[in-house]
Image (cartoon, rainbow, N blue to C red; front, top):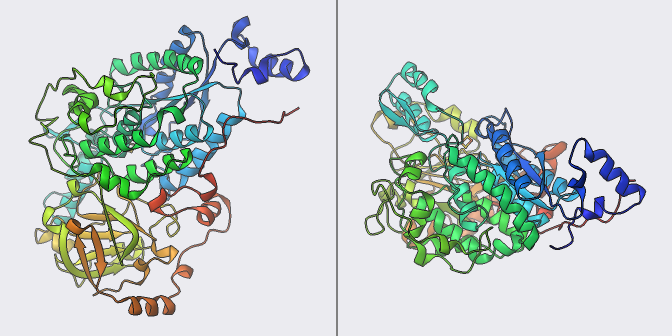
Length: 572
Ligand code: FES
């Protein structure tokens, strides 16, 4: 075994080594702090205020047992946790803060390896960003999706069906009382959202990157196998430390391309784009928006899961799981990238039967052909915007219509249901001021509600464009992540109601019929940047001063890259 990093704290007969050891003993076995015992932190995002991760303390106990069994010493390390449905103004504002705090605690403490316990949307991305920057041996335990809830005999997909039912209320097809009745049934068990939303997508991403034990992602949170795999992960991290297997050995450019293919095959969340770009940035890997379009192109969606399809995550597990699904696109995956086990991902993609071909659809009869994440550019989004064709209405992906512009989320909410709103089904709803800097924090509001009068007339989808993100559980013809955002002076700031917008998926184009000269003159007459809030203090100020645009992952500019695991100075 290599010399352990923790020996810098614990080895020796001087006063500092004495202090480090003495304060940690507290009933540990005598040899626990010997230089042969890997010290493993369990970075634990359990929190009673992160409901999707509430069960991770139980999971941590299984990880601990595995670490002890393999000869390591486990430590529970509570880290910043983010409950997607709870934190205001948006969990994305705090992703980078969580990642920064995690990174610093990983570096500061006497640890040799990391087990990363995540679940709810931002937690796995933040953990991976931090682990990438410190580059200590690390492995992810995905907390797992919840079981399917049922209401009036029908399965409920959390998130997706909330959006659907709330729209039905607005359309008048169900009552608000009926909608409220479904509340008790939506969240049936521990675990994260059970659709192929962001949490499920990021678990698949972690697995496709090679950062979980293969076959772990998608294991339902209440399933006993989640605990046995957690135990196995505890054993594995001790082996990873012994072999010096680090995130930079596992997460290579090719493994990112594999993750993009996996996201396409499962019809995963658009949020994976900003998260993958941010993680890659921590590793110094040159990943761009164009890689998403290129690597995802031609990959069929085979997971018949909400929000694109019909089923839910425990159906996917029952049908064979993520490995069975990825087996069907094995030929599209780079064979070299290794996983946390040291073996390539593709080694695990043999003999993975599909047990229910209505959930994991055959490659030659997929839910949708060629459905990765498409990148659009043009004079409305010079640095790019994204759309998820699998969640969109095909006819609206080739569309020309007049813009109806909202300057903020408050403006949209105030006017969207106005019976006098000048809007038709051909209108293009444009929302700005919701990017990383403008909101701040790039909230999931891009899937704007449709105007009530159109809903009542039976319209169920329209083209919507914004600098915001969209919940991974949402659906519709929603063009997101427009870069540069309006608050950064992007052309989105200068669109006016009535400008004609053209969406041309086939040519990957998003444009408006406004000349360069006219755009220049509008930009000179508008005080676009002054219109957005500039926080005076705290994290929000640091964030707004340093956040990058969505096309590069919306990380802070000074967090790109790595600090490594070396800390040179002592505290005493
Ligand atoms: Fe936590 Fe959906 S709210 S995963």
